Image (tube, rainbow, N blue to C red):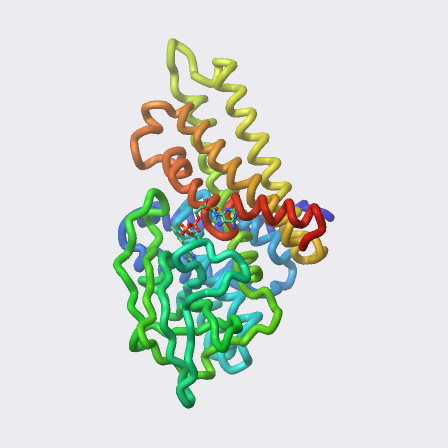
Length: 374
Ligand SMILES: Cc1cc2nc3c(=O)[nH]c(=O)nc-3n(C[C@H](O)[C@H](O)[C@H](O)COP(=O)(O)OP(=O)(O)OC[C@H]3O[C@@H](n4cnc5c(N)ncnc54)[C@H](O)[C@@H]3O)c2cc1C
């Protein structure tokens, strides 16, 4: 267990930092035109090992551990970009790389890694759809086609995606339908307006007699807890997203506390403000260690990986909300105006506790694991 990043990894983080710095000077990554923003970022990141790291092994880098550090950098610049890019690469990309057959993988993996196509993943329907809860989205065989019917409430990237991996059922068993943009019967609803993640494109989708090639159905998965696997990849993204939010909120508060004067002195001189910053930094640094350990477990200790990722997710996502809230308190009136890192982190942090495996369900599962039930 060594969580030190190598010189090569540190140089890669600086590279990513420079790319994101330049892009955020050129575009408002957190607002408006997600189509243009996301594609521009993916195009730039594709020229680095970033996209590849999310999906498969990359020589000289430490897989998910390196990705965790890189997600922190991207997420600190733009939570929306991180979410959109990773739902396409870490989640959709993993489905392609690990679950698709050679034909689909051959068609999709290279364009995905080159940043030429964008993916989305649609699992949840009208509730959390806890693992093993049968999904209502259903496919019916029709000669060499499969006709899919169902609806998904919230799908990151749906309005932009070239392909959507839709989890559903066929003959009573879980499958994933790979649906290409423009397929007849795929209805992508209006982009939703949300509390946070303004620069991401999220919408519902409906499959109304949507006809896809039978060869584009992955599965059926016999006894494989496929939803758990997909949620695990998503939870890993949410760890990186939490780190990014904490980094940006902490740094905004620290810089403001040093430069802004109240009552004749910089606010950092007030012990209560200093203590707040100390608590924020402690939560952030503890979260980094937790996330790195979760990444290490995923690669080297798969037996404990699921439960450890869920414990990390509960801790990181709640810490992100707390750090963001403290940052906003320190920025006070300036923070309460929109358009700063503290208020953005505050708005985005709640999503992290809802998405993937929610905080409530995570706690249930951590408890089950502790009792040896799973
Ligand atoms: C902005 C946004 C983007 C999203 N993007 C995607 C996406 O790209 N792909 C995708 O598949 N999904 C996505 N989702 C869905 C998300 O991951 C959640 O699954 C979904 O929002 C939860 O459904 P719900 O709101 O109906 O909650 P409900 O299921 O109604 O839950 C309500 C409350 O009950 C709790 N609860 C429910 N079941 C249990 C249980 N068994 N034990 C304990 N507590 C429980 C929940 O934790 C929650 O607090 C997105 C959601 C949002 C808000």
